[in-house]
Image 1 (cartoon, rainbow, N blue to C red):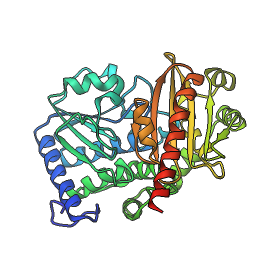
Image 2: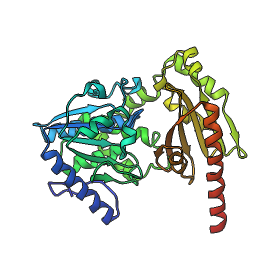
Image 3: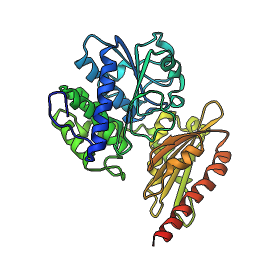
Length: 354
């Protein structure tokens, strides 16, 4: 129930719903006692991470006008270009520029300190911590948590927190949270696009969100250097296991030759995912400091987060990622055998059920 007695959107299971409400109560109590609040999502932020942070920031500022709320980036890098259209995105602060010891640190779209990267120091300095997330938790960094893996996006949980508070979801809040939902459901094309995600999206549109503006900025405003990079990645797509696993990659040299920015390559996993007949997609890109970042996607019942966890990363069943110390060839030699095991293990499980 919301504070004004109106039932919010949320999980249909009564026990799961009550657990979420209790978590919202604990987080609201922490916010009540905080003068300074830092909100941060994971390293290499996507639309759900950034939109959720901004949506929560604006909600808290509205409901607790006395609090000083700062949206924090996990990396000492600017907001990715395609998300700079989001309302109040210019307020993000890099972790090295944030010198306070906040009363409260709220982690959004992650629950483990390892994915905070440079912002981990701010989290450690905070007097209290809270988490709002939809990834499977392993070592949660806080005791006041709302972690529900059935939610399609962290933005859905933020929208339901705003409803719980009885907040006025204005156009700026709605636009940020709509971006979160749209991007984490793959424009409502991924397996996580359930009834709840459509209900929340409908609410946000009624509150002023513009799906067309989100589509224009995130999916229809590519720079020419990115399109040249995309053509290179498409040209080297390979498959194995009878086409059921597809993969490709981008090197540092590719970025330099095309002039594309590193953050522009995040959406290239969807190019690999689009291969007909593929069930698991892998995209690798070389990043600074001798590392490779990997993105994984699943079209079916294969839980790619299992492989991401083995590689030191994390994520959801259908979408996950990891960072690997080494070059692209070494990363491929490590992760492809794991994907083959995942694919065949699921196949054997299906045969047993049959």
